[in-house]
Image (cartoon, rainbow, N blue to C red; front, side, top):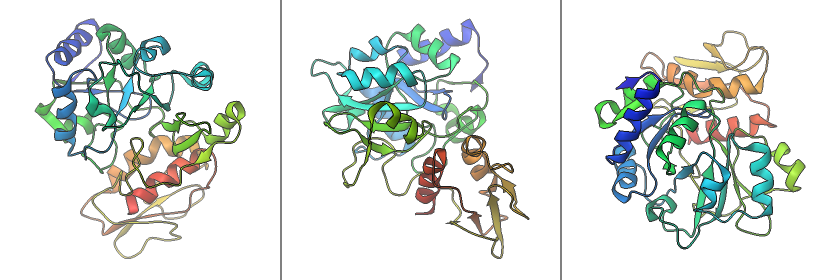
Length: 307
């Protein structure tokens, strides 16, 4: 059930969370499937409803740095990034405090926890009203295209949720950047809404993760996938294919950004993939995306969609 935003609706969402239910939560990145991060059964229901592998950790959302410091160890680097980029689309993987009452499921058995502060007034209002952190992966079936509108969430889950808070279309439209700060060298686990170049201004060189272990959300090889086959670096659509363009592309079925704006393209990516994921097409062909700034994150998502 989609509900508009007001004091009564926030109270309704709080009541749902206290009853162990899941809710649809708008953020600036994508809509989240939110549950009380300290409630084992509620967190377990995220995995069940999404069909999510239980070795894939969840991101914990809080309303302030100090609210998250109750659950994670923030070193000088973490606080430096938090001051610059929070609230915003940056997730930090940090050592989990041993006395934390977070559900063990949120870390999928790891001694770390992924945390962020969302930059969305509805999310922040709810987090402040609820007073506990929320586990909130993207509100879609595991591996499918992420939701950027309340209707996407309602279409996927319907009456399985206590409610879906309607916060409008997501302004970023792409999941958060994830940086691991549990080692001496900062490691990029997932490109996202904060470009790597901006992070390196503060931290210096950030290393790309080369391992195979799942250390954060969004690291499964096949992820964010439509039902149709996806073909990358296409110049034209093949027989029956829809063409998703970028920049000055002729005959595109849809165009992420005619002007070649990567911010606009990121915001449109998941919505347009959903629009093209239709039986009238045999597949989705995507024209090349520049591999810098937010283009790194866009290419990461479409590569996973094609796997």
